[in-house]
Length: 160
Image (tube, rainbow, N blue to C red; front, side, top):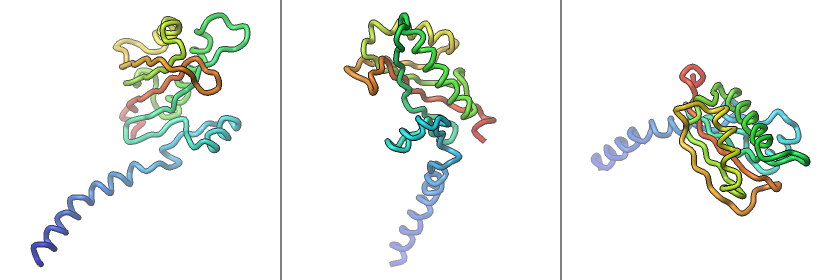
């Protein structure tokens, strides 16, 4: 009986710090970034997503969809808008493009779009570059051409 109690208390003591750490990572107003745009915020509330979530010193951005506008030549204007939106979200979290460690891009025509995205990417992300995976998909929400998802590490001062 004493051995069983000792094992139970030992297990509880071992798991207690895990519970505290998990509680520290709970999503809340100070760790979840929502859009300031009322239209975007309505969609976020309807579908249940945020601009970004901060977990410790790591920042996870939701995918941002690029779409072309009537009369635009090429893909670069759409990608510049997406990169500006990503930069704004990074800034709100106390980070910037230099803090990006991983980028995943989803393309409806990866071979036809990658050169334009790479050109815009190199105007915003400096060497040494983050990891980047480009994936071809059949379709994106809202008729988008590319969706970009980011993971960044927050600088030490911002993570406090």
